Length: 219
Length: 214
Image 1: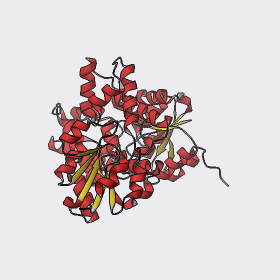
Image 2: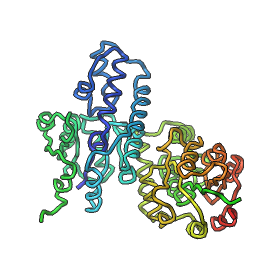
Image 3: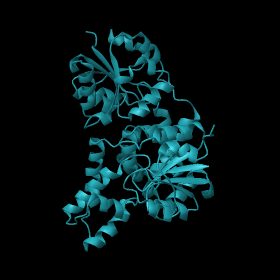
Image 4: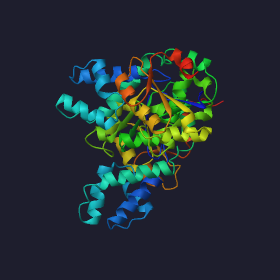
């Protein structure tokens, strides 16, 4: 078994901060989306994959430095808040490691972003060296490429992988890769119906994850 | 005059992390067709920020590195760490045992990583868990003086009464910029000329540290 964790929203509670920064950046470009709308339309995709969606809505191309400036603002927000770990994830990772189950991270975000969010939340040393980014493959989520890439590098067959995700593109990617997908719906903004419709098995408490993975024997 | 506060860098000064990085990077570069030795790697890449290191490698290779280069390197680094246990720097446990007075750690690494490194090498007991300071706590990391000044202020010591123990050039620059005395550990994985040029007093045996501070 290989457990593949999405990063944003599953390991670190970064989505509200990142989407607030994204909504602010869009407002400067003249697109008035609420934070909730930004989350609904863009969450789970790589920044590169978000651009065509926004540009179609805007009817023009975004400035060349849009992503660079957005990253500067977002990283500053992560440091200032600071970004927190998802409730219960530390204990879940401890239990998975104690059971000797291989696990890794596969995220639409870049390596620099993950170094920062995993570092600030104290999760870095547990995952270092097993972190894969959409920047490493041709097509990001919802394509299966990133999960297949992570499985290959970790030496696991796709049907032996279990993906932990919180976004619809992520669940679609996992299912397209032939993997079981557990959908974490503990955050209030999660679209439960969409995650279930895409084939995710819903759960809303990270503390229950070891048991869902079959690692805790009930007394 | 004896120091009011000793400030130790972690990676390379307390724990012997550098060989793992040297060997892992060299292995990755060799597989990509760049015939560098461990010494070449050390001279060209050690202590450099990620983007600078990648640019140097791409110039040497004459082509771009693959898209998954960063995860290849970190996977190799992690595999190297899995091969053998991380060790304390030679002689540092004896030195810490002989030293008296307030001391703390100030590192560019992440807090959980520093705690893990100190715990696995048996050095954790030499430091109060509350006296671990990391770059994430300040606005600018080394070579800016912010981290050392933050550590000194939190520990209630005046900068001019602090002594910094470092093994990297940016670390020495940070200590000098903070107005502190800096001892440069010129061990086998360091750049002694660079450390001296940045203003460090060099020493190459951790066992001599208590005498240097007496």
